[in-house]
Image 1 (cartoon, rainbow, N blue to C red):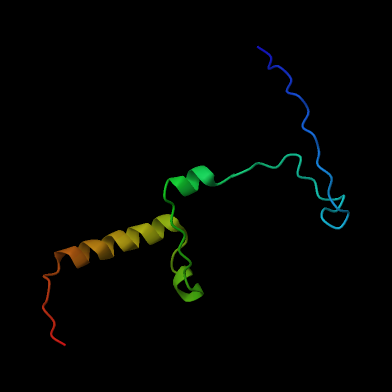
Image 2: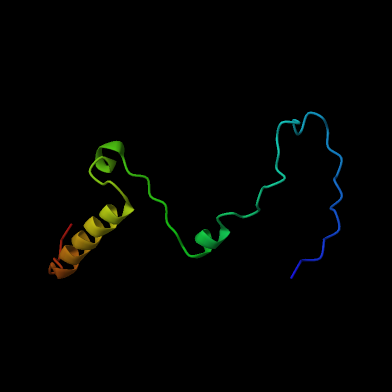
Amino acid sequence: MKKAHAKPKTVREVDNDDILPEYDFSKGRRNKYAARYAEGTNVVLLDPDVAKDFPDSNAVNEALRALSAIIRRRPKSRRTA
């Protein structure tokens, strides 16, 4: 089944200073990462000395889960100021 051809979009006029001819946005996509953002992806930047110990995000997640389990098992201490 073939799709019906859509009407060509009209191009708005722009100043020559705005867009250079070598810029080609014809295959561009709007909101390329919108779905991932909507899922609640968090981006965390690691310092270089820490990042060298973790080859990928799975390694970071494993380490954080292990640390989280240790923290949850520790009894809560009452600190006084």
